[in-house]
Amino acid sequence: MKLNLRHFTHVIAAIPGAIRRRRARGRLTREQFKDACLIVQICVLVHCFALASLWWARSHDGEAGSWMNWVGVAMAIAWVVCFWGVLLKQAHIAAENAVKREIQR
Image (cartoon, rainbow, N blue to C red; front, side, top):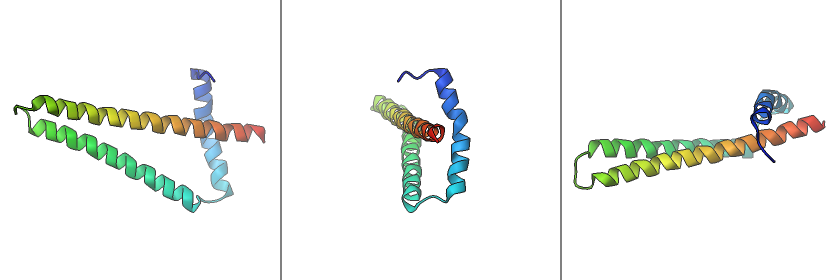
């Protein structure tokens, strides 16, 4: 399926309604809560790694292995970008599926 801007904005606009209906039906299940906690932990871990890498590169500037500092920073930034890309893609797919289910009702 080709993703265009109109389709993307339609899915994004339908998310609040899908969430409202989901909350009206009941609370989060234990599995959903555990999944949400795991996602938050991964987010914190990835961002802490990126910040630690940036701090280390800044505090070790001018040493003989300074090019390694930039490799570490580049890897940290790549991890953050890749992680958020995958997370946003999965969130969009889940929202799209919720909208499809609501339209079918």
